[in-house]
Length: 121
Image 1: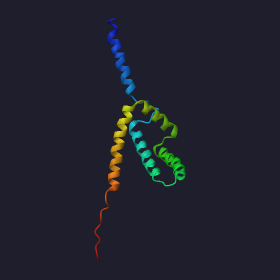
Image 2: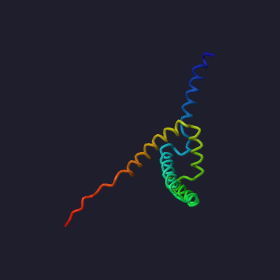
Image 3: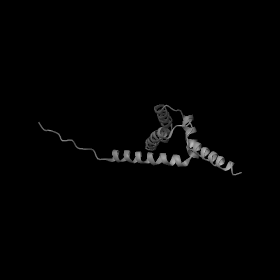
Image 4: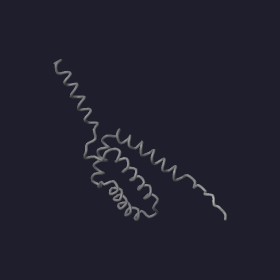
């Protein structure tokens, strides 16, 4: 029994390390952060639209544009989101980065415009 204990510990270690690796069939976190950022920007814009029917029609086109921009499709996006929902620690880390980027964008957009000096001739 004692002979197998180190082998058993090694197997557990190797299996636990393997589970941290994100499969190649999933959008990797760095790219997924960019996709989610764009998705949330689209969501924000759609929420400002006054007509719900127009927003619903426009949203499909906007989401399609996000997928095209990042070279993915809706199926890969959904598959990746399913994976990240099952791995909330990774999703949480991504959302921390996304939140900071959205806050920086908000700060930039809310900054008052700089008045340029105009030379009088």
